[in-house]
Image (cartoon, rainbow, N blue to C red):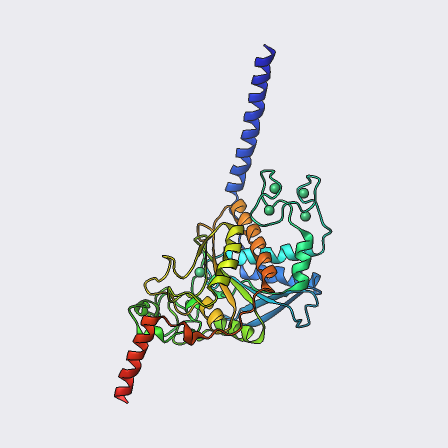
Length: 396
Ligand SMILES: [Ca+2]
Ligand SMILES: [Ca+2]
Ligand SMILES: [Ca+2]
Ligand SMILES: [Ca+2]
Ligand SMILES: [Zn+2]
């Protein structure tokens, strides 16, 4: 009898707590996540800056077509001085309709400024301090993952790295319509609808391949002014890409992450060919490190993702690596373009705090310098170029 009563009592408690959990989940599902817009981001960044002038700096890299500032946030100790520390560049919202890409970076800035000032703290109140840092693992086997991030880790990264963050490369795109707009809003000849340029096709690296091999590189598509992937009339025709270029030219950047959404994968150069770069091993090592934190698939140049249909030209990754010697990755966040569930967004943001801290920690071990791209042409491609040259010589 007593046993039966006990079981009944236990079942009541169990079902009640199950109800409580599902009720909580329901409640958070009913509250759609509210993403930043440009003005709220600008206001918040300004406020963070006012309270953290010793480790944070904010400046405009230039104005967009519609007159918005492209904000750059620098985070480092002695932030006004250009110190001899490895440089990390984090970018979001090349595509304005990919909201998690900037949201996660604003979240990262908040995390940094709050943890930098905090004593080492037992965030989950389990009696031990910093036992479960953000690395995608349940380090203390308590069934929760990354629940006690390390304050010291943030301090070390801020003190030893120069972190540059451009959360919204394309604020005009972010602001257009309810869901944002992939391209910028700079109207081009031949556009009555679908205004603007796909900024992640506007960087200068082997731009001419489109013209040489139009079918292989999807020329018809990216050269169509009204396509979603329109690359613009020439490399760096756009204020946003030019702003990024001028900035990168003026700084020593070792590694960069460009956030997009969606797909939950990581990719890196080359984006225009299935050939690997001379730094494939380094790309793989750091890429696998990132993948171990966020659990995303790592696509190397040889994977099935590329080429489509012959690869993508004009990406920031190709230019950053091929022209600027930066170890550059794209991270496609999330399973949908802009998840509406607050818990889901929070998880993506927190996980990528771990990813960003990790690349900062790796930055000092990465210095690839200028890449000699002439060595990077594939054999068949060299032959084609050779033939093309012969053909030109005959004409001349
Ligand atoms: Ca802690
Ligand atoms: Ca703890
Ligand atoms: Ca844990
Ligand atoms: Ca952990
Ligand atoms: Zn994108």
